[in-house]
Length: 154
Length: 154
Image (cartoon, rainbow over all chains, first blue to last red; front, side, top):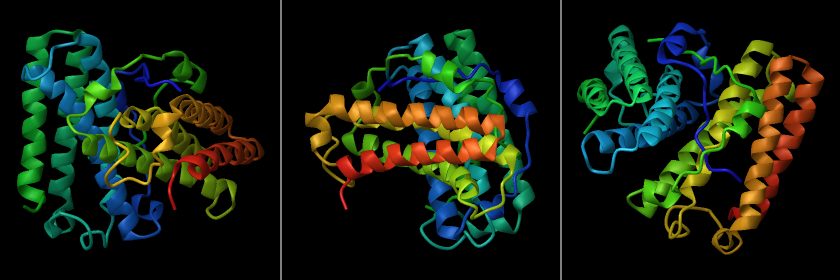
């Protein structure tokens, strides 16, 4: 078994350019499944973003290859969770604020912002310049926090 | 915000060929983090594989594009969970059998088998032939079950 980071052969720009609309609500049998899915996708994204952030913040040594690999996975993952915010999934094992579903346009804009910042971080990480990575981690982190402040309980 | 499946521009073969060894144990601050991560990665993988399987089994209508997109994500995800089976993560909120850590070579072989079958499913899904997808879903499902039977409690 190989533990590895796939070479996805794509840039953040290509990723953002390849939008495919999916019928989100049809993809989950139950709201609980959607909640579990989106939390899982955020967990995986956060793990990989967190490693890049730890390098940017000097908590772990900077490793350009590891930064690029983790940013790549975080960028792929950043696209996934939002399909899980289906109607009816504001109840249950979730910290999601119910206003997500009453102002979905604003929520979607905040999600897009994060996806864009993560894609920029991916580009920066591929470039290998630590100062650029630090700046991009800062902007990405801000976009995470903005959404958490507005749309996550606790 | 765009809900979409990224075009990853890679084949299963390319994916399997781009192995990068990661120092798995160093990546998680606590065993609980590793457990949460691997469960999350399996959840995302299972969701996307499940959609292809549902088409293969006729539970939902076959949609070649959706099958290919979901198989692609499942294939990317199949690489991620195993970094979470770090030493010391046999205790806690996990159904992982402790023998994973005493026969890691066998466990890794079972993981590799699943990754290979998923990559084949990805190729089949890109081809768009439902019979080929059905066969690949069957083989992939067998590789999931083999590992669950051996290494997952309950």
